Image (cartoon, rainbow, N blue to C red; front, side, top):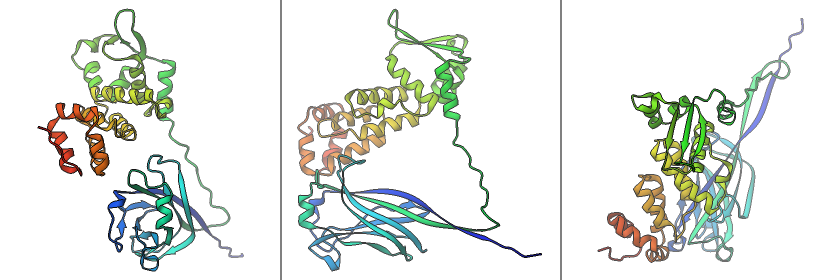
Length: 355
């Protein structure tokens, strides 16, 4: 009998993106400085971006230099590219893209562009906004699988989970709904048919209210007087579908206002992940005129991550810091949270009295 063997070599790729933001770019004065990003993982390997504002040795004082550095003691094959990003448009606005075809990274080695962009061209590019530069790195790590067998090895494809879709359908069709939630008061209220077990599973506050010794646990309906119906509808959407309504992804004032009220509702009902999602959305909307109001709000509702984002935005640039301190929002912050206002000033580039 003929002895037949076979093997297969299959290539696949794992992609990742890292945004490296250099704030206070104009404060960099030394021409031999190298700035390195935090470590980030793509394809199971640790990487870092190394940026030379005045160029590496072979491009010193003429061009900026950018390199992708492998921080592992292993060999990796990867494609990668660098481009500059508009700091105000983190998902669009790519400029000056430079690609590097497949390259074999040796253990703890770097590869990139010694002459990425001339220093004069960088100043004229419009990529330095609010004294910030954002470098975007796209990485495609190439991996190989080897296995033995005759012909194509069969694989079983597992479909994505449908749990959120199935539970979400319960909200849409009201199947076996056992609880009515009335939002508002008198003639201006709205009814929602819901499932008490879903609300109890998603919120510890509802669990106590519906499954404990409170009067509501013995009723088929409850009333919430001090909440807008649209906010409660968005809250229900998250509790059933683990995501937010599509319109809340818009960068509109209405979506921003909804996010604020939804965060308050998430805090009220102890839905922590939803609260953090709202914090993240609000952190992307801050500007000179709104950041102090947002910081005041974050302090009142114990949103530590949102508070940190606001403080970093306020103090990283002296000119911006001074402009923020002239706004109505910062004046209110000084009245409501004097110690917090002092923290901003002590960590910023400008100094005023809060007494």
